[in-house]
Image (cartoon, rainbow, N blue to C red; front, side, top):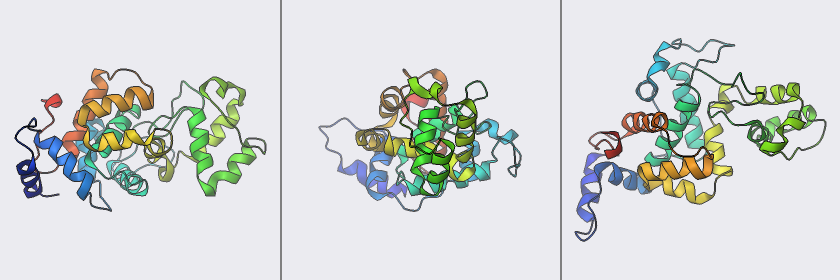
Length: 245
């Protein structure tokens, strides 16, 4: 996306309508002219997740902390796989994950059995995510006693801790862990959320957090994560979102 596109879009806005910020216009332009495949860079990850600088430059097997290069590849693959390549969508997903994973330092919640991935899905969603992967489905069924489980938050406790641990382990590898947030948006949220995130900026993010993720009002920490993601991903020449000034 080039700044000339943003200027052209601004020129097309009716004088009777409120003048959008450059960021809003960039989102709108991205919705119609998103380039596929997109590429997320290590530099963008470091800008969006500052404490990830403390992770090793190369991911270490068996450790939860992901390098910026590992995170960049994982998110590039996920955003392209699920077609979430507009600026608004990527900003929301990146902002969500940096908070949930502590800037990609964590892959599981040690205090809650079964919760994990870079989006910190609860186990009922971890199960659905693992089952949704054709290459993992047979193993998910085997671990679950040979039958497909239909779980909610209230019935997670009916699954033995070890089974939760083993099924979660299937999606903790980079190939799946970085794609969990994208899968959730595509499969557990109404399609209107993805559409709204394309052009809605921060208000759409707050709606996504409250009514799709179910995390309630956006806290200052979540807002900061969104702002860092927005600044990291915004096109050259686009203004910083007003909420982040």
